[in-house]
Image 1 (cartoon, rainbow, N blue to C red):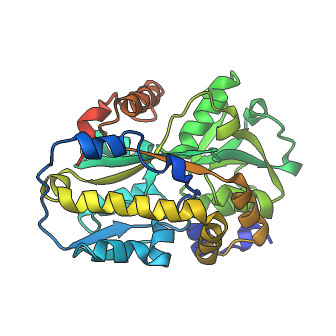
Image 2 (tube, rainbow, N blue to C red):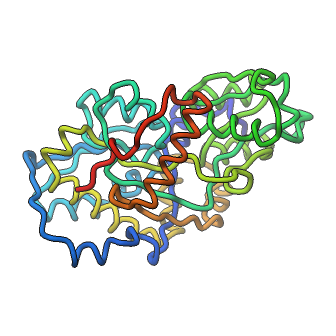
Length: 340
């Protein structure tokens, strides 16, 4: 089977998100336990009993939706969950939040979120996730004659605009001293990029898990640049976003959603194989891909907007993106990060 034989729905499933097993010791933000004891009680607000949450195939919300515990956890607090999706990547998830058809995006890339903020979208970050090992990669077919990033000169590479795919390609070219003008960036969303790669319309594809893993398997492809192995420092993170007004008016509900995600992560930390089976159930990829993802044994570390050290890391990443015109100007990420 190759990617050209996969339906757009299957590729949508594959592109929708990232499942990572969460280590119990690293589940909660480092300061959470002490903060909950030491902080003064905060006045939390809520003006709705329903929360609409975006999801994508293979993402943390996908597993939460399938298991049903997330809904029960919030239900015990009088909150009804409505799932909105699936979304193929973070940009349309953000659009749903901005347009008012969803209250939360899924745990998507910070890069398109920053781009949306700069464009005037009224969204803010509520929480962040750093997962490792990072598995976004640039892949080429083994038969392509491309054996290194340097060999991409004169070639076409599929990337998603202002997202993981684009920044990883730029970082790879920069690290390997290849001028960007020598490579043709082909801007495609995942459901279109996968068949383009399979059919040879593009020579390489910069993409995240599990779609990159499915395509590597289906097209006898290989990595020439891997984020976890080859990137010098983290540039992109997973993030939970809402509208600013919704955050200001519903801090109680947002706190409950974040805490429910921590409960979900604790389950995943103890049931990584079962978690990957749930992701595969929706995305319908081969067992070999599921086993590869299970063997990665990825772990998540959640952070919140009052984590100064983390915000400094995100600011460094945002400055890097701005300097390379992946986002169009600098942004002070603290102004768009609200702790509840």
